[in-house]
Image (tube, rainbow, N blue to C red; front, side, top):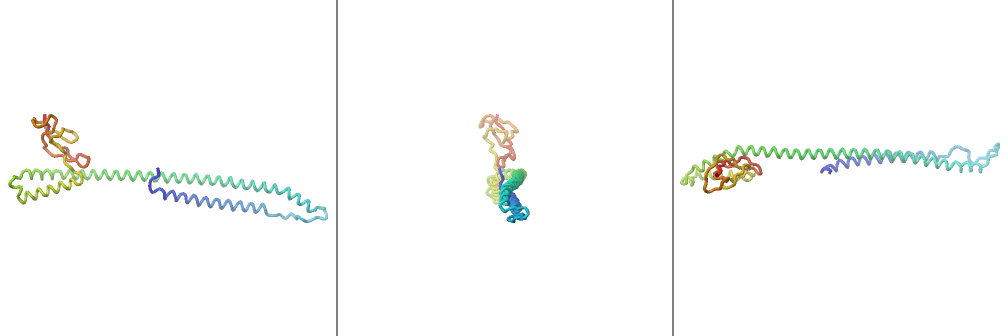
Length: 236
């Protein structure tokens, strides 16, 4: 398959080929015309003159010309055949060169297209790694917000300072959600090592065995990638 953007290069190669072909045909036609004019030019043979010493008559000259005419025509046909073979060989050589150049352009465009795709993929991977690194550094800030809000008593939550802290925390979580950062569900879910990190087992009457009973540290995902596993206690 020819990648997008290769049509311009192919047209350039075709234009070069057509110009060379036109020049070649013009040269061959000119050479053929010159050869034909040379063959058809009358010689200084003294036709129509009667020599008194030899007794030759114009009839004898006509007979000789009739004999020479087929030979001249045969020679002209041979010249035409020679020039045609020569032209065909040159045309074939030009076509092979054109095919070679066109193949080279296609290969170079395919290589460039592969390079472009590979570069875009590497850029996307680097962006994902950079975003994940920034998110990992922000998560401890989120943890501290949550710990601070949990330590506020019911009476103090309506105070201006506590209310402002809660609004900032809410705004931070909304912005993280917009870029694809979401918390991992843990409590009440079946333990999954792909998302949960079990640090202890606890006896529980509310949860079945193998179910997450407590969440000690909240885990987060960035799009489809786990940024931090949830630190949990599993019911036994």
